[in-house]
Image (cartoon, rainbow, N blue to C red; front, side, top):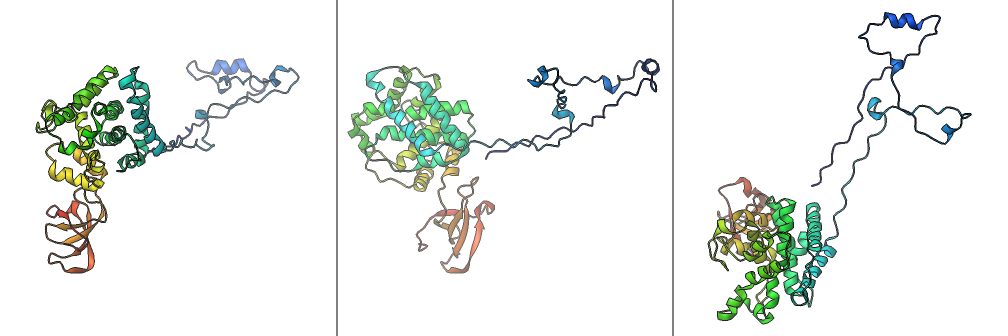
Length: 386
């Protein structure tokens, strides 16, 4: 939310009117000066007024004298209207910005064969624009969250563009400042470049790999980090983030088998978003999950792989139980989710439709689970309530 600054008010100061000097015969100047104590302030007629600005008329001795320029605003009453507040610029259109990020990442593939200097300034400029867009609106987040890809698109480039944008939103949600977000977004845009050197056939069977093929696929974090290091990143932390993006909290990740405290925090953000993005748009023939289904999968089966704070940040953006979902409570009551509590994503507002015996209520009963600590959702059910 953009906060408008308070309007600037004029400072009101009473300025006594200048006193005209009396005629000499009624008020002899020398005698009056003699009566004034040495400590008294100088007469008001001695106040020096600002010199009027020069104009063409002032160079003509026969021209009438210009009136003196008015005193500064702070010495007068605030009679004029305050300046209008400066409105924030509108958010950048999300679709073209996402397309530019994706196109840049796709073009980076050419550097693997052709060499040349990597345009880090260009990438950081795109990331900076994405940060600004996400600060002003969630539209870019939802464009990246769309689990569909154009026909014939470079999957690796598209996937990295999604992870870049989604990671920026999550990083902002957990308090990253702009410098950390630029580093995070740069790593998110390049964390899988090593996959371009692995056969597409392996990527399409990533869920069923074994033996040498699995070992080759598991080499891609180090391969990606080595490639980006050769490109001379402005921040070495980008390389570390890329190297560790498949490490997991309980040491079940690779390539180093690190445990929670030893894993780079930015890597944990990219790890979660990478998993979520792959569930909603997998590289293989595995069925894709809808966004809230992917979140539910992460919470149910992979909750030991990622820090709870990052999972909660993702939950606050994409609810496990979006509005309209039919759910069952631990009381066996059935209801429909009607609103999500951002601070308590697993405890939405529910409209109870049937009691614990399955009998439909005469009138729905509204229940805010964030205010009912002993009640909770046990899972979604079909529209029939079964």
